[in-house]
Amino acid sequence: MEQASDRPQEPQDSHGLPVCYRHPGRETGIRCTRCERPICTDCMVSASVGFQCPECVRTGSGTGHAPGANQPRTVAGGAVTADPMLITKILLAINAAVFVLVLALGERFVAETELIGYARSPQLGDEIVGVADGEWYRLITAVFLHEEVPHIAFNLLGLWFLGRLVEPELGRIRYLAVYLLSGLGGSVLAYLLAPGNQPSLGASGAVFGLMGALVVLARRTNLDIRPVAVILAINLIFTFTRENISWQGHIGGLIIGALVTVGLLYAPREHRNLVQGGVCAATLLTLVVAVIARSAALA
Image 1 (cartoon, rainbow, N blue to C red):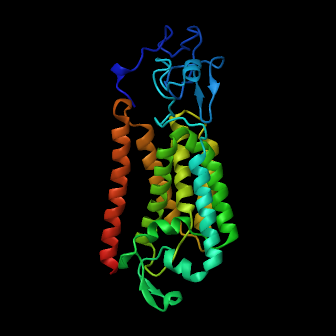
Image 2 (image 1 turned 180 degrees about the vertical axis):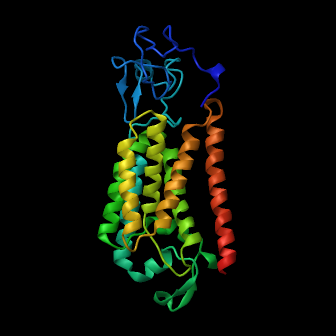
Image 3 (image 1 turned 90 degrees about the vertical axis):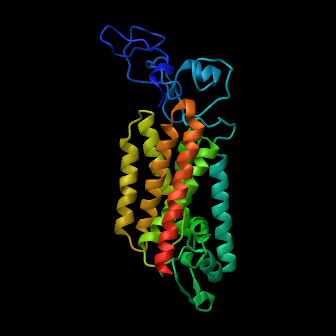
């Protein structure tokens, strides 16, 4: 959001309703997702999420008021790039590469990298393992770990579908922050609520975080949120009705993904980078404190 004094005066009709800035006689409820000026159906240009005004499309300024003055920006303030799905492709490749390692190295590799709180591992000679034993890396390595083809196929399909919608609107760095914090958030909630000897793995927490991000993004850009809500509801039903699913990981990722995206999209424009960085840092600090507390209780 931005202060009223910093926003351009928008045209209104005699009843105080917004009208298209190019066609003053036309009332409209549509706004440019970048500069937020009201635009009619004849002026709106479709974007990957929402619509943009002709000026923002032509200048690529992200503000629509200073042609050529700024680098093109996403709705979250990220840089517009030639390949808007680069991070998604890299994440897909990393998940696939780790799956190949699982197939090559077997159970021992899984036992050394999966998320587990505090337990003995038969695969490692009954050695005591887990996050509570100082193996914090498991909170992240488990996010990229899959053992079965259906599991990784479902998660990578979700990552591809959601990534092509979310990454172009957030930008690379912000999108990566949402993905990693969501995955970490799912791991942390599983660590907090699941039994200490219950292992879990998979990118589902990060994928659910992207679902939460998409819901916030649709709300922020005034898109019809119902299709997104239906997809989320179906996935939540599967989460709580199918066996061998870490509902904690899904819900933790969903909550963190939505909260972080709120901070990214609604940060005041004049202090956007500072606020966005603060939201991510505060989220990470909260998760770290939660892990410290749980580790003390387990060990």
